[in-house]
Image (cartoon, rainbow, N blue to C red; front, top):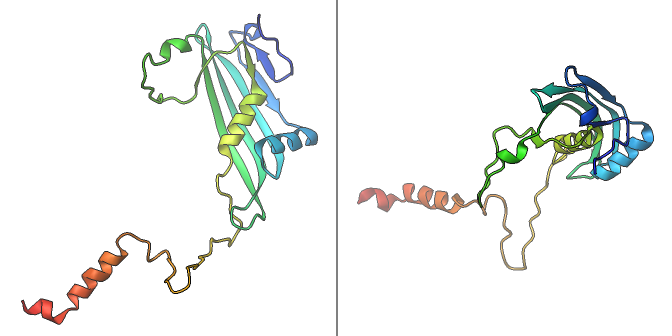
Length: 189
């Protein structure tokens, strides 16, 4: 059973012209942006534009070349205040008809040099590519201006609290070496 395109942003490969490019422009409305933000687990999404083209590559392969632009609002990892970031990313996917021939035949799997290669689907879903590209472009640890992780000095009564300086592996060695250099008896030997 062949897959049927269900939206204007789903292109059935069999229907694509094989001698020219097919252009697209995705600009989601406010309701769609709200749903996308919920799916991505972010506070808000604004000014999303995904424009590009699907091009024939040889006899049976296809390429998607696009530009992603979006303004995302995420919670700060320190203060949870909203952090707004503008994303501008090029996006490329290469769909190969013989992709299965490229898959490794064994237990070990190496990452290919070209991470844009994918098996050719029956339908190229531009909205799915948009969501994937957007999720990969999101800042991992958004931080509000001036937000810094503080240091907590907690310890049981009667013990010294661990700090960033005391947990460094060579801090004690440095103190020991420094103590040897200052030892007057060590220099007389």
